[in-house]
Image (cartoon, rainbow, N blue to C red; front, side, top):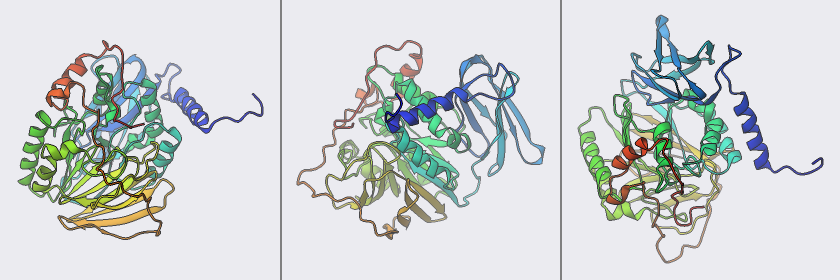
Length: 445
C-alpha cells in the first residue's frame, strides 16, 4: 500500500530473498543456482574442505590455484545437492584461490590462506548467538569483514531453530562472503539441537561438523583443532558430562600437555561456567568436575555465548569471556558475582591476536567502537583498559544464584554420550525426519 510503513525486518528479509534469487554461477544459461556457499571448513596446514549446496542434484568440481603455477582439481563423486570436497596437497601458510565449477559454469575465484606449520603470530575473530535478528546479525558481520583474521570461532546458536531450512538459508546469505574466505570453527549451541527429532543435529553436522586432524568429519558434537601455538577445544555444553564427551575431553587435555610447541589452550562452548546474564553459569560443568579439569590441564581461557551480551572475568583459576552478541536479542545483567569484571549488553565481536606467550583481545561493538582491550600471558590475570570509558550495564545483584538448569541436552544424550551415538543415528535419519521441536533453555527467548 502506498504511504504505508514497511517494517525494517521485512526490508532486510526482502533484500536477502533478492540476493538468494540472484546467487547464480556465471558462465552458462543453464548455470546451477548455489543456495549455500561455497564456504571453507576444516582449514589446516595442507588441506581444506569446500562445502556448497546447489538447487538441484549435480556434480561439482573445486579448482584451486596457487604460487609457482600450483593447480589442483577435485570433483565430487556423485550428483547431489550438498557437496563437501576435500582438497589436499597444499603448503602451510600459503595463499590460494579457489572456484567451483558446475557443468560449464564457474564461480568467481576466492582467496584463502592455509594454517602455518610453525608457531608464528596469528589472529582470529570470535562471535556467537547470531540468531533471530537478521539486521543486527548483518551489522555485526559487516564489522567482522573489516577485521583482520586467519579464521573465525563461533560460540553457537547460529540460528533460532536448527531444523528450520529458511533460517539456515538466511544465515548463509548474511555470512556468505565472510565464510567463503575464512574458515569458521563452531561450538554447537542449544538452538542448533532439536528433540526428539534429530533434524537440527543433522543440519549442524552437515554444515559445521568438527573434524579429526586429517580432516575427516567426526560424528560427534565436539572436537579440537590446533593453530600455530594454540589448541582449541570445541565442546558441546549441552551434554550431561557423564559419558563419552567427558572421557574424550580428559584424554584430549592430557595429550595436549605433551604436545610440542603448545603454549595456549582455549575451550570454546556455548553455555560456559560463568555468566552474570539471565542464564548464569552452567552448573553441570561444575558438578561433573569439568571446571577443575580444564584449569588443572592448563586451559587458560574459556570462551562462551548463550547470554546475549559481552562479559569478561576470572573464576576458579580460569579467565573467561562471554561473547553472545552477534545478532540475538540482547540480555541485561541479572547478578554480579565475584568473578565478573566487565559486562555490557551490546552487539559485538572479539578480535584476538596471539603472539608467542601473549594473548590480546579487543572487544569491539558492531558500530566499530572498542569496548575494551585486554591481554594476558599464560596463567597471569587479565590486564585491561577501558577504551572509551563507557560503563557497562549495571544491575542490583539478587542474593540467589543464577538459574542454570537448561533443557538443552543433545538428542539422545540422556546417557551422557555427548552426541556420539546420537549423531550417528541423526546422520542415518536424513530423509526420514518427522515432527520437530526446538530444544531451548528455560527463559531462552
